[in-house]
Amino acid sequence: MDLLMQYIVTGLTVGSIYALLSIGFVTIYNITGILNFAQGEFAMIGAMTCITLVNAGVPMFAAIILAILITAVIGFIVERTAILHARNTSVIVLIIITIGLSTFLKGMGLIVWGTNPKQLSPIIKADPIQFMGAVINPQSIVIFIILFVLLGVLYVFFEKTYIGSALRASEKNPRAAKLMGINTSTMSALAFTLAAALGAIAGILITL
Image 1 (cartoon, helix red, strand yellow):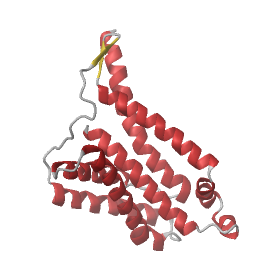
Image 2 (cartoon, one colour; image 1 turned 90 degrees about the vertical axis):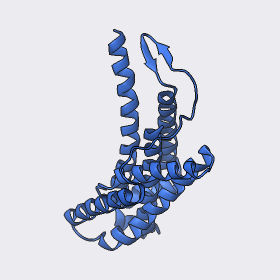
Image 3 (spheres, helix red, strand yellow; image 1 turned 30 degrees about the vertical axis):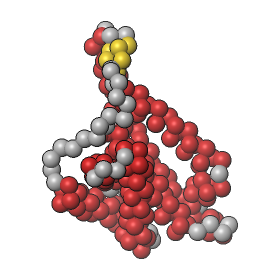
Image 4 (cartoon, one colour; image 1 turned 45 degrees about the horizontal axis):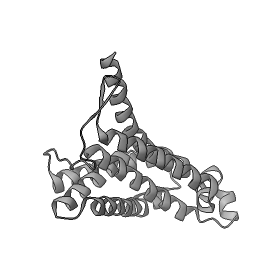
């Protein structure tokens, strides 16, 4: 029973991180209709940028915020340079472009940060919690909380705000969205920026 509970806790922790990654993936697809195979690289950039900033002496929470912002800007640049001018091409072409982006960003990451494993110090420095025979790392609780908070924020954003509604409309019916005065090009850039930020959050959580 103890081993089963430990498997459940570990599975939920890992699953929560994958859920964070998938939120960014789905965000881009639902808004632009593009399968972004470079989403994992956004997580890598966010994590490694945060580690670099912390090693440079930047306080942990400031480094986290800066890393998310930097990754979001990279997501915006990626959309403006590689995706924007190919939006009217076939789905296969767009998929190949994102695969190429994934390879490029991965290669740049290897050049900048190398291949040695890196890790951040835990946000919460506390002893593991015993629960029904399982050992729960405090970082797992942080991951669960962040996941549910982000899900709630994204739900409110997409369902209750004008920008969120404009983002959804841009994917469901781009022509009608344009007739309503929605700039679908801007919405596409916003989608990549948002997805990159979500990927960065997931990547940072992986390194804790």
